[in-house]
Amino acid sequence: MELPTLQNTYIGKKKVLVRTGFDVPLDDKGNVLDDSRIRASVPTIRYILEHGAEQVIIMTHIGRPKNKERQLMTCKVAAKLSEILGESVMKVDDFGENGIPDPKIDRVVMLENLRFHPGEKDKDPAKRDGFGKMLASIAEVYVNDAFSNCHRDHASMTSVPKFIPGCVGLSVEQEVRTISKALENPERPFVSIIGGVKADKLNAVANLIDRVDRILIAGALAFTLLKKFGKEVGKTKTDTEGLGAFDALVSKIKDNPKVVLPVDVVLADRFDADADSKVTSVDNIDPGWMALDIGPETVRCFREVIAGAKTIIWNGPIGVFEFDRFAGGTKEIANALAESGAITIVGGGDSGAAVEKLGLKDRLTLVSSGGGASLELFEGKELVALKALVKA
Image 1 (tube, rainbow, N blue to C red):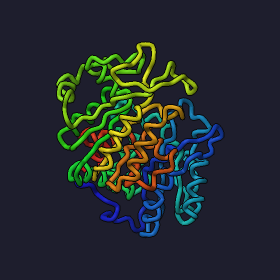
Image 2 (image 1 turned 60 degrees about the vertical axis):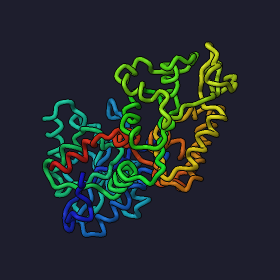
Image 3 (image 1 turned 135 degrees about the vertical axis):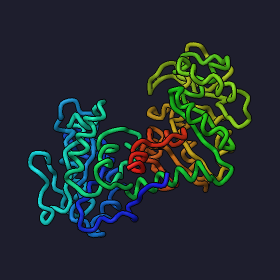
Image 4 (image 1 turned 45 degrees about the vertical axis):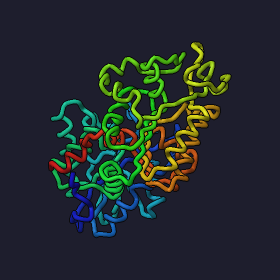
């Protein structure tokens, strides 16, 4: 899709409504624990201010509120943005009733958590459009800078562009272009790494298998396939029920020279950080044990493939990296990407969290802010929020 960009949108002397992805982790008092998603949109906000906008009105959702929980209000997020931006950010509690502050006094304002309003996620398109129209009424231009939510058909993402001109922000533009270029015109060899639990991750494998030179499959997904191929996987978590829709693809994967599956594993006697563990071949998994990580021979094999790559995309955890004893595979693969010199794209979610935890983000080309959104691009799908902008 040819996206409308911020650079090609006139914003001078206008009120600009910016949808951000400030769904940041908070403590029980609403304090921001990780401000990386806020920092990601600061260049967009600064650009708008520097190009003469009358006012920037920021909107976001936080968490999954059930009853307008106080700790999910945007007060502390607005304060954190103000600190990073170096400019006052006025929090607006109820813009529908009280209106928006005078732009001559407050150039930057932030609305309350969008998900406090039922219209944001309502299943009825007419109700979503009603809320979207209300949001659009307080501004003249819409900017989508929330890549992490671009796969969601929510009012602030898909309805607002129906009522005022819209474009993508700088961070969304960068993420979409970086991922799209890797998928459509990669430097080769092109390697993908797919992990995770659910069999529906095979949608990504289906889209990638004819595009890539090698595809490394890990996590519970690998053991779902190994079980399908007749291997004993013990008590390892699998999703064989979800494989039903992928029979043709599973046949294509089996014995495919492009596909690399684990050859050894780290087993645990139970799902616990302090579980007893041992390394074994995938041909000798004990029925009473479960695989929680890839083994050293698989790490060596994966590292060899990664070292020869020019473009690498990774989505989904390698093992149970939350437990230190079973985080070895994830650490090794993350470090291999950082050392590779290749174009490296990590698709957010758990794999993105692992890279962040290991302090490797700055050594990679892109760590996406959206696990679900990036996965849909890996699957070859169009993102509904971007489609709405183009259509409008």
